[in-house]
Length: 156
Image (cartoon, rainbow, N blue to C red):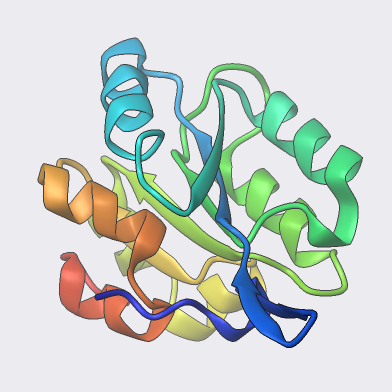
């Protein structure tokens, strides 16, 4: 069973109440977006929001503010002018930034061009290469952050 992150827990009248993990998915490939809507959108205890451009993702982050999302899963090469790196930068400006997963077909190149520390400075917590299995996609949304490295390849 997946452990509920501490920031998703609250107490109401002495009873622990968990809120859904809020996940923003930014993906411009229609087929992959549909798959992600089915796989992630139907998960229990996940409140998923989907968009297709970096501009939309940045607007959603700005609109929702500090409590916007717990996780962001973003392609790097999105439709529009903004990239996944731009989305991560905007998210990193929040007081309590969400964990950002760059989900891209260019994972090996990005990992070769950036150190782990450089990626973290850019707001990227994890780089996940495409393609992933259904279980791996599901895991990006629900697995504890400290276990995501074990879930995917390549690793940071």
